[in-house]
Length: 482
Image 1 (cartoon, rainbow, N blue to C red):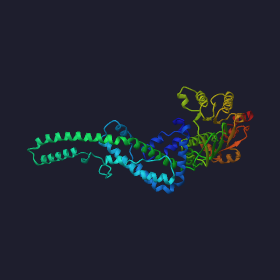
Image 2: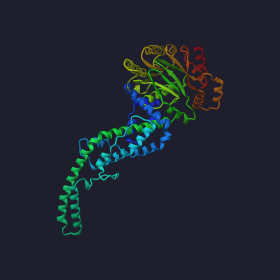
Image 3: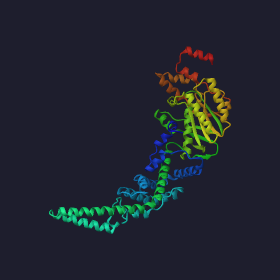
Image 4: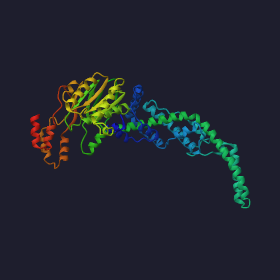
C-alpha cells in the first residue's frame, strides 16, 4: 500500500496516535511496513512480546516509566558514530557519545528486569562500562565532557605552565607583551596535544560502536513495542493468530472511522467476516457502509502484518506478501486516465503479481466507470479468474449475478427490516436535505451478514429516493421500469 491508501484505511491515523520517546523509535514508526514472508518468526515474536506486555503492563508500569524517562533524554548520535568510524571526533561528538553510553548503562538493568518479568525475547542491552570509562576516566558519571589534564602528563604540564604565565600577565603590565607571545606558543602546543588526545579517544572508543548501534536498535524496538501497546488501547483489541490461508475477524472496528462517528454522536457497528482462498463478494444498498467494511478489513489485516494488535475480539490473519486495493480515485485524472482506465492498469499489475505472490486483493465497485452490461461481464470474469488463484479477494459490487460465482457472499444489512413509514415519520422534523440524509443514516445497520450466494443485491435505492423527496414524475417511471 502507498501512503494515500494507508491514510484512506486509517493506518496513518493509528501512527499519528503513537508518541515514541526516542528518535530511534520515531524512525521505526515512520518507516513501518508489513513483515515479509521469510520474517514470519520475527512477526510472531513481536506479537507474542506485545501480548505478554499487554497482560502484565500494570504490574511493570513503574519500571516502564523509568525506562521511558531515560528514553526521553536520548538524542540521535548515529551521525557522530558514522563520522567517528574514520575521523577524529570533536568535543561535542565525544560528549554526545558519552551521554548515550551513560544512558545505556542505566538502561541495562531496567531492560533486563523487564524482559525477565515479562519473559520478552529479542531485547538485549550489552554492557558498555569500559566504553564509558574511556570518556569518563575519573568515574564521576557527570553529563559533561572535556579533555581533562589526567588524559596526558604533557597536557597537564602545558596547562600548568600556561596558567603561570597568565598569572604573571595579570600582575605586570610591563611584561604583558612579552608574556603574550610565550602564552601563544604554549597554547599552540596545548591544542596539538588536545588533538592528539581526541584522536586517541576516537580510536579507543571506535571498537564499541557496533555494540552501541545494536543497543540503539534494541531501544528503538522496545520504544516501538511500548507504542504498539498504547495504541492497542484505543479500542478493544486482540492478538491476531497468523494462519496459512484463512482470514477471520470477529467484532472488528476501525478507530479512524470510530472517532469520526463519535464526533457526530454516532457509534461504529462492529463487523465480522470469515474469508478463505477465493473471492468473497460484499453487496448492499447505497449509504450502507460497504466501503467502511473494506477499509476496516484492510486496516486490521495491515495492522496484523505490521505486528500490531487487531481491533477485534478474535482475529486470524494470513501472512500475505501484499495487500492491494483497487478503487476509483480522483488521482487517476492526474495520470491522464479515466477512473476505469486506472482500475484496469492496476488490475493488470495485480494479475501479474498473484502469479508469484500470496495477495489479499480488495476491490471497491470495480468497473463501475463503464457501461453496466460490460462492467458486469468484466467483474464476473474477474471473480471466476480469482477463484482459480491462490489469493484472497474481497469485492464490493452493485452488479447482479456476481455473488453466485463467489466463494462467499456477505451483505450489508442497511435498511433491511426497517419500515419506510417509520423513517418517513422521523424525517418530518428535518428542515433540509442534509438533515434528512443524516436521519436516514441513523436507521442504517452497517453490520454485515453471510447470505446465500444466489441472493441478489438489495434494492433500497428507490426507498431512499422516495424518502428524500425525488420528484413524483421520475419515481412513477422508476416504479414502472422496476
